[in-house]
Image (cartoon, rainbow, N blue to C red; front, side, top):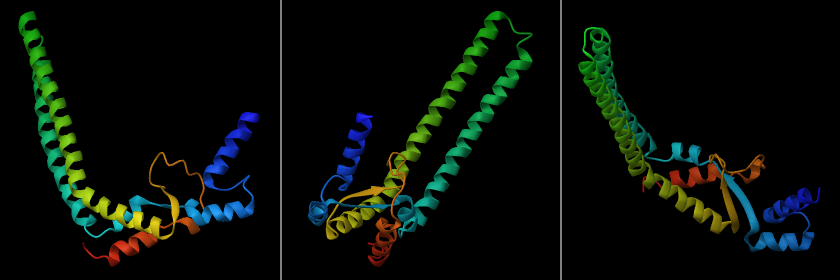
Length: 183
Protein backbone atom coordinates (compact mmCIF):
# COMPACT_ATOMS: atom_id res chain seq x y z
CA UNK A 1 0.00 0.00 0.00
CA UNK A 2 2.91 2.34 0.74
CA UNK A 3 4.28 1.88 -2.80
CA UNK A 4 0.95 2.97 -4.26
CA UNK A 5 0.92 6.12 -2.10
CA UNK A 6 4.49 6.97 -3.11
CA UNK A 7 3.67 6.43 -6.80
CA UNK A 8 0.53 8.59 -6.51
CA UNK A 9 2.49 11.34 -4.77
CA UNK A 10 5.17 11.26 -7.49
CA UNK A 11 2.50 11.50 -10.20
CA UNK A 12 0.81 14.39 -8.42
CA UNK A 13 4.07 16.22 -7.84
CA UNK A 14 5.12 15.78 -11.48
CA UNK A 15 1.74 17.14 -12.57
CA UNK A 16 2.29 20.10 -10.25
CA UNK A 17 -0.63 19.35 -7.94
CA UNK A 18 -1.37 17.33 -4.86
CA UNK A 19 0.53 17.62 -1.62
CA UNK A 20 1.78 21.14 -2.45
CA UNK A 21 -0.11 23.90 -0.62
CA UNK A 22 -2.32 26.05 -2.85
CA UNK A 23 -0.05 29.09 -2.61
CA UNK A 24 2.97 27.07 -3.73
CA UNK A 25 0.92 25.41 -6.48
CA UNK A 26 -0.11 28.81 -7.83
CA UNK A 27 3.50 29.97 -7.75
CA UNK A 28 4.71 26.83 -9.55
CA UNK A 29 2.15 27.32 -12.31
CA UNK A 30 3.29 30.90 -12.74
CA UNK A 31 6.87 29.70 -13.11
CA UNK A 32 6.02 27.40 -16.03
CA UNK A 33 4.67 24.20 -14.48
CA UNK A 34 1.50 24.29 -16.57
CA UNK A 35 0.76 21.45 -18.97
CA UNK A 36 -1.31 21.05 -22.11
CA UNK A 37 -1.68 18.64 -25.00
CA UNK A 38 -2.08 18.50 -28.77
CA UNK A 39 -2.97 15.82 -31.28
CA UNK A 40 -0.16 15.95 -33.83
CA UNK A 41 -2.01 13.67 -36.28
CA UNK A 42 -4.90 16.12 -36.55
CA UNK A 43 -2.50 19.06 -36.82
CA UNK A 44 -0.43 17.36 -39.53
CA UNK A 45 -3.51 16.56 -41.63
CA UNK A 46 -4.61 20.21 -41.37
CA UNK A 47 -1.18 21.67 -42.22
CA UNK A 48 -0.89 23.34 -45.64
CA UNK A 49 1.14 21.09 -47.92
CA UNK A 50 0.07 17.86 -46.25
CA UNK A 51 -2.38 16.96 -49.02
CA UNK A 52 0.36 17.17 -51.63
CA UNK A 53 2.81 15.18 -49.51
CA UNK A 54 0.15 12.55 -48.77
CA UNK A 55 -0.85 12.12 -52.42
CA UNK A 56 2.83 11.85 -53.43
CA UNK A 57 3.39 9.17 -50.80
CA UNK A 58 0.30 7.28 -51.91
CA UNK A 59 1.48 7.35 -55.54
CA UNK A 60 4.93 6.09 -54.50
CA UNK A 61 3.35 3.37 -52.38
CA UNK A 62 1.16 2.22 -55.27
CA UNK A 63 4.19 2.04 -57.57
CA UNK A 64 6.06 -0.03 -54.97
CA UNK A 65 3.06 -2.30 -54.50
CA UNK A 66 2.84 -2.87 -58.26
CA UNK A 67 6.52 -3.81 -58.36
CA UNK A 68 6.10 -6.22 -55.44
CA UNK A 69 3.02 -7.73 -57.06
CA UNK A 70 5.03 -8.40 -60.23
CA UNK A 71 7.74 -10.08 -58.16
CA UNK A 72 5.12 -12.09 -56.27
CA UNK A 73 3.60 -13.28 -59.56
CA UNK A 74 7.05 -14.37 -60.77
CA UNK A 75 7.56 -16.29 -57.54
CA UNK A 76 4.11 -17.86 -57.77
CA UNK A 77 4.73 -18.86 -61.41
CA UNK A 78 8.07 -20.44 -60.52
CA UNK A 79 6.48 -22.35 -57.63
CA UNK A 80 3.61 -23.55 -59.83
CA UNK A 81 6.07 -24.71 -62.49
CA UNK A 82 8.10 -26.52 -59.84
CA UNK A 83 4.99 -28.20 -58.41
CA UNK A 84 4.06 -29.44 -61.88
CA UNK A 85 7.57 -30.67 -62.72
CA UNK A 86 8.83 -32.04 -59.40
CA UNK A 87 7.50 -35.57 -60.01
CA UNK A 88 9.59 -36.02 -63.18
CA UNK A 89 12.71 -34.25 -61.88
CA UNK A 90 15.71 -36.11 -60.63
CA UNK A 91 16.70 -35.49 -57.00
CA UNK A 92 19.55 -33.25 -58.18
CA UNK A 93 17.30 -31.24 -60.52
CA UNK A 94 14.70 -30.99 -57.78
CA UNK A 95 17.31 -29.62 -55.39
CA UNK A 96 18.47 -27.10 -58.02
CA UNK A 97 14.89 -25.94 -58.61
CA UNK A 98 14.35 -25.60 -54.84
CA UNK A 99 17.50 -23.47 -54.63
CA UNK A 100 16.24 -21.35 -57.52
CA UNK A 101 12.91 -20.86 -55.72
CA UNK A 102 14.72 -19.95 -52.52
CA UNK A 103 16.74 -17.33 -54.39
CA UNK A 104 13.61 -15.87 -55.99
CA UNK A 105 11.96 -15.73 -52.56
CA UNK A 106 15.05 -14.07 -51.11
CA UNK A 107 15.06 -11.45 -53.93
CA UNK A 108 11.38 -10.81 -53.26
CA UNK A 109 11.98 -10.34 -49.53
CA UNK A 110 15.06 -8.15 -50.06
CA UNK A 111 13.30 -5.97 -52.59
CA UNK A 112 10.29 -5.66 -50.30
CA UNK A 113 12.55 -4.45 -47.48
CA UNK A 114 14.33 -2.03 -49.84
CA UNK A 115 11.03 -0.57 -51.00
CA UNK A 116 9.76 -0.29 -47.44
CA UNK A 117 12.93 1.56 -46.44
CA UNK A 118 12.69 3.81 -49.49
CA UNK A 119 9.06 4.63 -48.68
CA UNK A 120 9.95 5.48 -45.07
CA UNK A 121 12.76 7.75 -46.30
CA UNK A 122 10.41 9.39 -48.79
CA UNK A 123 7.83 9.96 -46.07
CA UNK A 124 10.48 11.55 -43.87
CA UNK A 125 11.61 13.74 -46.77
CA UNK A 126 8.08 14.97 -47.49
CA UNK A 127 6.69 15.21 -43.96
CA UNK A 128 9.74 16.43 -42.00
CA UNK A 129 9.40 20.07 -43.15
CA UNK A 130 5.74 20.04 -42.13
CA UNK A 131 6.58 18.52 -38.76
CA UNK A 132 9.29 21.13 -38.25
CA UNK A 133 6.75 23.93 -38.85
CA UNK A 134 4.36 22.28 -36.41
CA UNK A 135 7.10 21.89 -33.81
CA UNK A 136 8.08 25.56 -34.17
CA UNK A 137 4.47 26.66 -33.55
CA UNK A 138 4.11 24.30 -30.57
CA UNK A 139 7.41 25.48 -29.07
CA UNK A 140 6.35 29.10 -29.51
CA UNK A 141 2.96 28.43 -27.94
CA UNK A 142 4.58 26.62 -25.02
CA UNK A 143 6.94 29.55 -24.39
CA UNK A 144 4.20 32.14 -24.90
CA UNK A 145 1.93 30.46 -22.36
CA UNK A 146 4.80 29.68 -20.00
CA UNK A 147 4.09 25.94 -20.03
CA UNK A 148 6.41 23.25 -18.80
CA UNK A 149 5.14 20.42 -20.99
CA UNK A 150 2.88 19.85 -23.97
CA UNK A 151 1.96 16.21 -24.50
CA UNK A 152 1.04 14.65 -27.85
CA UNK A 153 -2.10 12.54 -27.53
CA UNK A 154 -1.41 10.98 -30.93
CA UNK A 155 1.73 9.30 -29.58
CA UNK A 156 1.02 5.67 -28.65
CA UNK A 157 3.17 5.91 -25.52
CA UNK A 158 1.92 9.26 -24.22
CA UNK A 159 0.51 7.82 -21.03
CA UNK A 160 -2.46 10.20 -20.99
CA UNK A 161 -5.60 8.40 -19.93
CA UNK A 162 -7.80 11.44 -19.41
CA UNK A 163 -7.28 15.16 -19.88
CA UNK A 164 -9.27 18.35 -19.52
CA UNK A 165 -10.33 19.43 -23.03
CA UNK A 166 -9.53 23.02 -22.04
CA UNK A 167 -5.84 22.03 -22.11
CA UNK A 168 -6.06 20.92 -25.76
CA UNK A 169 -4.06 23.32 -27.94
CA UNK A 170 -4.57 21.39 -31.18
CA UNK A 171 -6.93 23.91 -32.81
CA UNK A 172 -4.76 26.87 -31.77
CA UNK A 173 -1.72 25.24 -33.41
CA UNK A 174 -3.73 24.53 -36.57
CA UNK A 175 -4.97 28.11 -36.66
CA UNK A 176 -1.46 29.53 -36.29
CA UNK A 177 -0.05 27.25 -38.98
CA UNK A 178 -2.83 28.23 -41.37
CA UNK A 179 -2.38 31.93 -40.55
CA UNK A 180 1.35 31.60 -41.22
CA UNK A 181 0.46 30.55 -44.76
CA UNK A 182 2.52 28.18 -46.83
CA UNK A 183 5.81 29.30 -45.31
